[in-house]
Length: 89
Image (tube, rainbow, N blue to C red):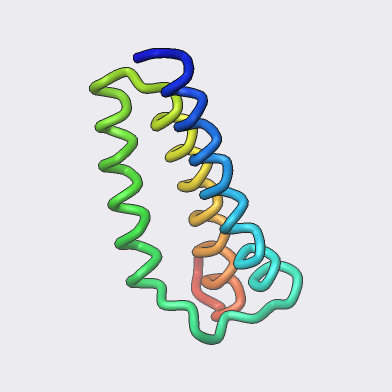
């Protein structure tokens, strides 16, 4: 894959990760969890894991990095919601 293609992928991944910051802030700073569907977040996580596997199979660093970063963001939201809802983690 060309460097230009990987850079586009990295930029897209960066924007995708930045999009999760308001949700992380809402959960961890505002302590708000209303409207957050954990089943939806688990489904998104599963999709990202499949994209990560795909990225590993085709050795696309942009896909690998973007999906690891997005998974970390989603994990932060899930853990924050579980903490607020008093689930044992």
